[in-house]
Length: 242
Image (cartoon, rainbow, N blue to C red; front, side, top):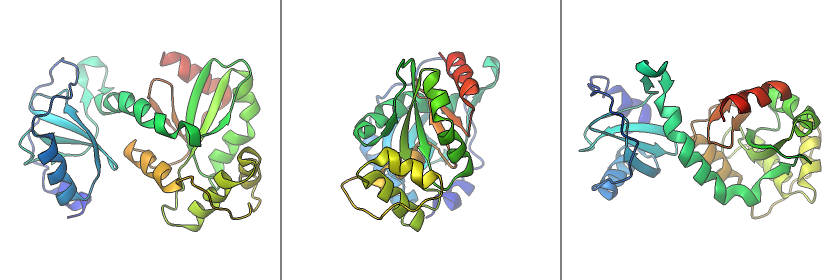
C-alpha cells in the first residue's frame, strides 16, 4: 500500500494530551514495528522513539516523520505543534538531533566551501539546475566573508534515476568538484564521470529529513531552513537559532 493511501485511512486518530518528557528511545516492540511499517507502507525506518504525545511513537523514515500508536495499528503523518509554546513545531524539533547524527557518515562526500574565519557551518542540499541554488552559489564569497562555511550535498529534484542526478554525479566525480559545481551552476556541461560517490544515498537522506525543494539548509543544531537566504539573512537566522 502506498503511503498516501494508507494515511488517508487514519484521519480519525484521536491525539492524546501532550506530555513534557523528552523523547526516549526505549521501544520494546521496535523490530516488529519497523517490519510492519516497511511491509505496509514501503518505507525504510531509521529511528523509533517516544513522541511528545502520550501513547504514540515518532518514527523517522526515508519519507519523513510518522506518528504511530504503540501497537502499530494507527498512524498519522504531519507536523505536530505545541500551542502553549507559541506553536512550536515539535516535528521539526524531533528531527533536529537525528539529522546531526545522520549527516556524519556523509561528511567525506560533502563539497565544502570553507570560510577562512569559520564561525558557523551550514549544510545545503542543492540542485545544479535550481535558480535559487544558483543564486546562493553565486554569493558564496558573501557567506564565507561572514564566517559561514557552506557544505553541499546533492538533492536532484528530478529524482533518482534522472538526467539531473547524472549531472550531479558528474560534478561530484569530477577531478575538481568545486570547480565543476561552479561550472554546472553557471549552466555549463560537466563531463560525465563515475566514482564511488552515491548520489542516490544523498538524495534519500534529504528525503528522510523532510526536504521537498532546494536549496534546503541544515544548521549546526539540526534545524532545517527551507529556501534561499542571502548571506546577511542567513547569519541572522543562524544567530537566532543558537
